[in-house]
Image 1 (tube, rainbow, N blue to C red):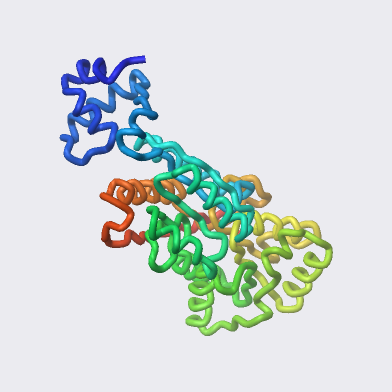
Image 2 (tube, one colour):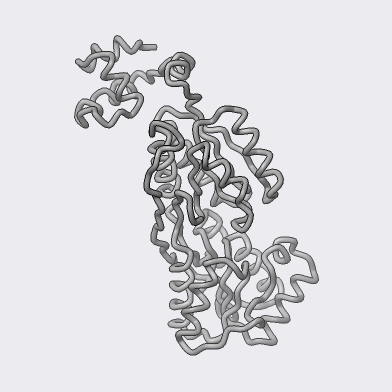
Length: 329
C-alpha cells in the first residue's frame, strides 16, 4: 500500500494537492487531478477513512433507499450509484423498503443513526413524503428515478415516454390500446393525452387490471385481463414495467393468443429480461447509469456546501426516454 506522501512524490505534487484531489476540491488543475488519480488508481491507494472522518466531521457514507431489488431496473441504478459514490471516496449504506411506507420511515431513521452525510431515495408513495421533507431540512437529500416538487431529483421524463409509446402504437394502426398501471402515474398522463389528441377513445375499459392483480398472477386476475382484452377488442397493451409486460405475454401465449399478431405488448425500463421473453419485449429505455451518476453528483455537491441550511438552487433533471423496438410489437 502506497502512502499519500509516495503518491504525491510520484505525481510530482504536494501532499496537500493529493488531499484536495481525494476530497474533490474544485480548485485543482484538471490535468494535475488526472495525473494524481492515475497513480491513486494504479496503486489502489486508500485514504485513512477514520482519520478523514474525524478531520472533516463526516462519515463519508451515503444512504440509499430503494423499494426493491427483484426488478432488474433497481440493481442497474444501484450499481451506478455505488460506482459514482466510490469515485468521490464515499461508501453507500443500502436500505430496501419492500414498498412499505412504514418501513421506509424506519429505514431512514436507521440511516440517520449511522450518521450518513446524505440520502438518495426512491420514495414508496409520492403522496406521503412528509417524513422525507423533514429530513431534507437537516440532511442533503436527492430523489432518484422520480420527480418531486421542492426536492432535487434525477429521473426520466415519464410523461414524454407515455406520449412516445402512444404515438408508436397509433402509427402501427392500433385503435384500442389497454393500460396496466397506476392512474396517477405520469406514464399514463402523456399516453392518455396523445391518444385523445388523435381522436381515439380511452375510458375505464382500457384500464385492464391493477398492477398488483397481475403481479399476484391469480386465475381470477388472468381471467379478468383476458375478458377485457377480448370484449373490448384490445390489440395492444402498455404496461408500467418489464416484469408486468412479461407476465402479460405469458398469459396471452398460455391462452393461445399470438404476440404481437393478436396483441402487441410494450414494457417500461428496458431491463435485461426484455431479451429473455419470447418474443423479445419492446420497452421504454431509461438511462439508468446516468440517473445514478447524476443523483450522486448532485448529492455530493450539496454535501460539500457549508451546511445543510445553505441556500441553493434545486437541481431537477429530466432525462429523455427512448423506445427500444423489439418483436413484441
